[in-house]
Length: 126
Image 1 (cartoon, one colour):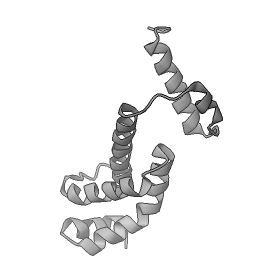
Image 2 (cartoon, helix red, strand yellow):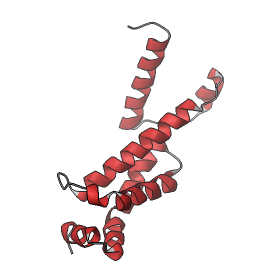
Image 3 (cartoon, rainbow, N blue to C red):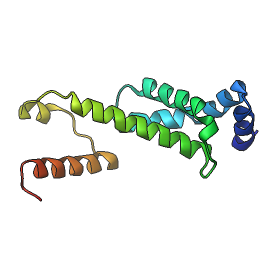
Image 4 (cartoon, rainbow, N blue to C red):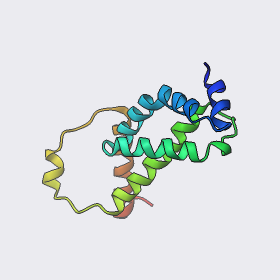
């Protein structure tokens, strides 16, 4: 059965069709969330699934279901990262040097963004 057919059944109230639809995409979304936040992966994936079920009537079909689900997961990741940053504790520079370096594309982007934010915060850039 196609995603579109499962989606139609799910929108009509079919919980089993929704579960089948989520089963197709859960692992990909889980990996995406793991890359974005590193931990709390299962909780965030479950929140994304719950939000998708709750807001299924608002899905307009302008994108695929999987794209919509990724968008929900991305927003949850952003909120989690924002909350994490808000509650972060100060770390000694030596402790940062001891952490293993990540070398992925996303890590490079996040490192560059962090440098820009730090430079801006200390007034090196306007």
